[in-house]
Length: 350
Image (tube, helix red, strand yellow):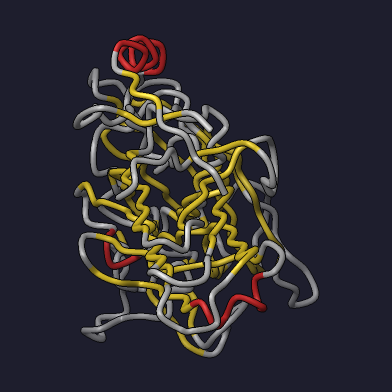
């Protein structure tokens, strides 16, 4: 394969001015489909032979993909991007990999590296398993700490026959809820880890034996005379951005309620301007026949925010008991992250 080299400096500045945006709490990969081509405002490219690495043709979707290796004469190709992580939740890196050509000698490899930690390695001898695009999913939950982390995808094509790697459709799948199954209670206080319970009666707690999945759920008890609440607070690593969207889902089981609206859920965004936006507020129905029912809420932050609080409540002034379990709150969209500034001349062309 022939790759020609073109030095482009002034063009990069114009592209950056066009794409600078605020970082999103939705943990969005900038241009995960590589459709902005090369030079790219989000991806840094490094090639020992000075090649452009984001090229058109043979993409999984769209027109562009990242092309690592592909010379057979000795090449180390790296694409990288800084990712700002929230303080809480779970995250996975998802991308698609194709190996259209490989050297069976066994010395070439593709690696996925985060902050120097090697999370995934594919030796060239596995090439036949990737003759077409295959999805790769890697757990990034250990890096959900509010910091910025460097993602690198590196292909090492040593001297010999050619090994090529195509990368496309890179994304972060992020769930803002930690311990959404309510299974973990490390200190045994009947409060699921990462959650809070406000229960003047002391009767609202983690319970065993009634659950949608696993062994545990949280029970909100009635006839207590005071509001009982199960609370989860999501805090982004940086300011959450107006337009961030999430889909919150949970499962509930309730019986013995005399009327609608005795229990339900409220979701609030605490904004950076000191205001509070109600993203969702509704009472829930009683279930019948011992059946767990799903609930879903589509959430959009109207302003920049510091945290989002999810509260499951029981008014406590009437009979009825409610159980909740199996929470998910994946990020489904938001503004793109700010692109990284280039560290030197950018190579482009094909």
